[in-house]
Length: 69
Image 1 (spheres, rainbow, N blue to C red):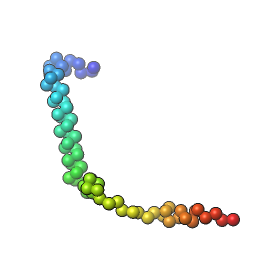
Image 2: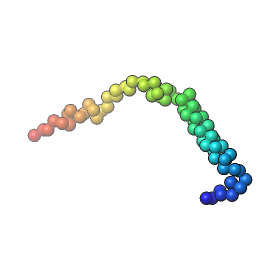
Image 3: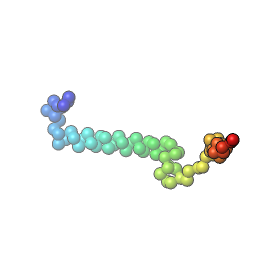
Image 4: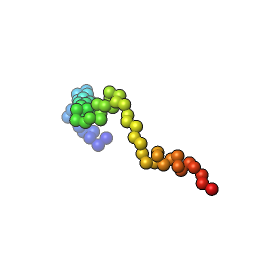
């Protein structure tokens, strides 16, 4: 372990829960920032209906299936 001497200064019974709490708080803040600052996350979480997008390849597909002799 690279930082093994850390546990001589901080007891593991304090350091490990503190580390886990810091990870949980930072993860929550990132997810909160995504949910409040973007529009697509809210639509995704609310089950927003996807829009059907017609592409040029979809329109060309029936023509490509025809075999010319």
